[in-house]
Image (tube, rainbow over all chains, first blue to last red; front, side, top):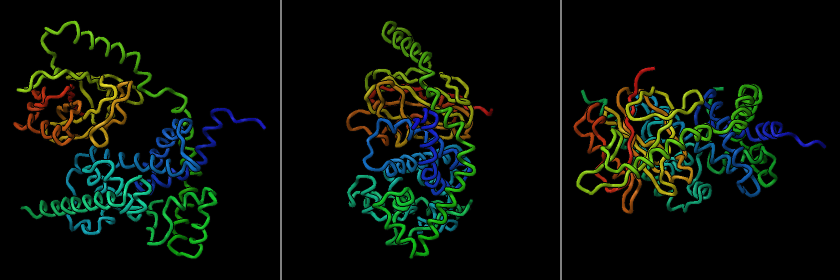
Length: 173
Length: 252
């Protein structure tokens, strides 16, 4: 049987992994057009690394993390690109004590995530958007449950304070 | 397709487990069995299949050529190397051979902590897929993508910027990056819409120094406020090798 050329190999892998990448990007970015852009960028990154990366019995967990990180950076860049969104919405606009719901709002998610380091932001995405338990997050990221719990608590405390500050700003005449 | 993916309920498989099940990984087949008897997971799988369909109908045809082109073309930084390397060599020669000349506008000294080594910093702007080096005083536009080359192989550097409104931004994820042998810092940044000067600092982290300390130093040097403070902020009060480039952000 004839082996596919380089172009055929790229296409085959894009068909194989593209749907999973697109789903991950669509879930986190919540915008089909942006998810489309992100999908091709993630795939290019994945393809360039496939040859030299050892990923065990499945590439999907690794691809999933690359897509998650890429989308996280996109969300942060979005907050940086649009200066008009510099203010966090008031608490009343976002149900501040349901941070999962707050992160479902693209604008809020961008502004919040931009204020945390990569690790903390990724933990927050997994726990609050993906609904993963602390044990699952720790397993996915190679961290102890204790570390995950600590980082998550830091995120929630600071996020609530930031959202509360948004409400206070609005209340100021 | 604008509806979000239905949320996972406690005890249900993770999204990744469903992905692996859909990919045919036998170890994750129980996730599909669970979904068959779970309304929530049935809805999640329906969303995933709808997204697959969208990928096949729209995303794949729309992006296939761009993906192939990107993979068969060297990355922009490699295409920029013929320009970047001579510039870096020339900059190094200037530093080594002409130590007595007055510092150029982009040179960094320090106040009260001795003279730190300069940290050669190059900034490239990515416009329509073409990389061009920008120097102090050059004009850039909102939305321009930036990449950085720092001559500090295997060192940890902080890349940070400040604008006339006093906004301090981390230019790489987490604010710091370990510089590879090529000097090309992983990641990059996209310029926001605030017009006026934007000064970029690269600082080589020293023991006991962290991003927050560098950010505080940046805020300190622009504390007088306004565009002029940013243009004048040529040095950070840190005993660390540092470099800076001042860009002027104008409307396209």
